[in-house]
Image (cartoon, rainbow, N blue to C red; front, side, top):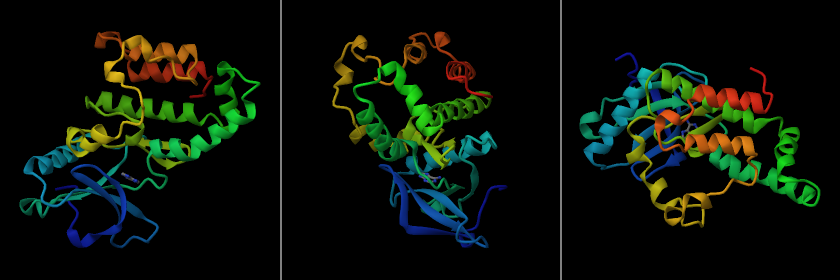
Length: 256
Ligand code: ADE
């Protein structure tokens, strides 16, 4: 009740799609009485989806209500459930103008990195690269990682399992401010096609021995140690997000 928003009180900009999965779709929108610059994001299901898909979006909505506010979690603004019987639900969340972190990494950051590597190819070692990136972009990677760890601590405190933490589910509110999105039970269904077609890597990793997933080029030994701890078979042996935040801050002398 508290979050219900009437159909007349918002508009969906159908020509401005922000994201799309097999069953779900996110449009840019606007709240009535707000200026054009006050955009929102409206998540809904594609037409004529199975009832289970609709219920999945409803359960994502419940998770978002339960989560309350956190600066590193995409904020729920409300929901329009008046057409639930006809098979339509709209979840309204804050708009993050710079889009998803994965796209940002593949475009903006990729270009910066490529330039950096080609300039320095002969002179720097892998160990030195993170420092060079830092000086170029003001520690942005660590800043993002720390914020993601903080958002995840909030989920931990609310006993919510994200289950699909990936850069495609992290949005940039601004260059220095990231927010986690797309959590709750719905992610398996709504993002189904991420698992089907989005295999970026050429590696047949499902069929590879674990030791072939070698340390990424830009990860230092210390970072790789943290990564390996996250892959411990026994969940009790994995670090929690507070620990990850602390490690990042210590390694990169990042102020709190
Ligand atoms: N894509 C998916 N959700 C979004 C949001 N809240 N803001 C901007 N782009 C998005």
